[in-house]
Length: 483
Ligand code: ADP
Ligand code: GLC
Image (tube, rainbow, N blue to C red; front, side):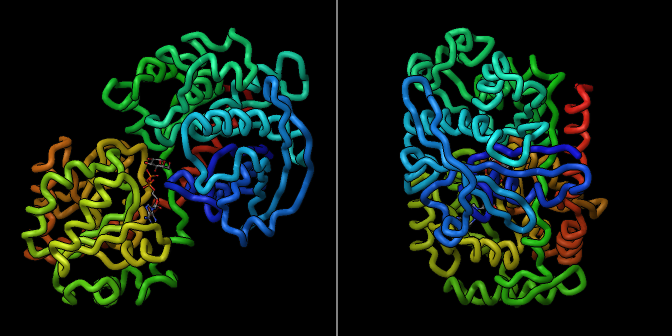
């Protein structure tokens, strides 16, 4: 049996800011326990919901040096739905109102976390064969491991894997400061190791020192070798080509199941989605105060409101799109300019636009379950989970064909009557609007094709089963030393 420890900064149901949490919280459930056991180690943030925080059990504590600082490290644990979660406790670092805050604080916070993960392992009853790190917050784990291996036999033989969920976030800070925080030797702070463009870069460190690097879709694994998507690290990604692969994310098919979803007004499956989704739509229109009409096409957006997600395209043409016979339901938080933009349009078109500028699991399920189409015109998208949730609920995604969106949504072919959604290529507002309008035309004039698209989407399988197999193959090769 291969033992894998996930080192990550968020996981459902404990703490979530984006898709990373969905991945970390759900993927471990889908391994064959006889072959691979995955456990997870997270920071114990004070902002984790109380109900979860109160049920953690104490395991051990010790003090750890972080250069000239000596810090308390507590270890707590719990078992949730058959998965073992460990939590690193330190109230100096993890007591903020959100998991991430100012970068200069986060840099020290996650240096602490990276080293604490390694120092905690001898206190667990679980010595991993592989530490699987996710995103920059755990980027220093492979670096510290390299350092530890010099004089400590215990750590020799542990392999590391680094998964990039988003290359945009790298954890960069002044080299001198990071040296002072981490106590790592100057030897690490050179351009073929941790340094990038004069700064210390946690993600780069993780990529350089990990035995294998993955990202969350095949297309994104290729894209990041190009300057446009490479966020300054495209050279490194090309150099790492032989140790880099893309494994597509899945979603939790139990959590996101239209046949059993408690949040939607009327559950449905492939047999009855045509009738029942209309009932869900009416219920959502009533709840949100939009004009109640089951015929009107409803387009949903559930997203972090950031540049990555293509909101500048939407801002260019939203007024124009609101002239059509459509309704928009937005659920999201993020940059103020986008939050205010949607508030403004909800005020201007109260029967057509509903802006919900907050976070709500419940409303997100209602939107995936009730709307006809889902708009996701991302500038870049490592994988994207929202379009997978949409497909699962017979909601037709309209996407820019980039990264994981390209790998998971097959554009409609009007002549062959095939596809699962609509796609456009160029990052251009009018190209997006043209595609939305094409979708409107199919929705209103070719209902049979539209329903076929929805049905095709529901028939796709983006559960974790297949991806977990791919990770398992990779883990096996890593422990056998084949890669
Ligand atoms: P990213 O991780 O880049 O934000 P993903 O598509 O991978 O994008 O995952 C986003 C996840 O966050 C989905 O589960 C989506 O439903 C959820 N989400 C985003 N914003 C909200 C919100 N305001 N309320 C509820 N869920 C949200
Ligand atoms: C990141 C990416 C998103 C991906 C998620 C989980 O947040 O932006 O595309 O789905 O990580 O891997």
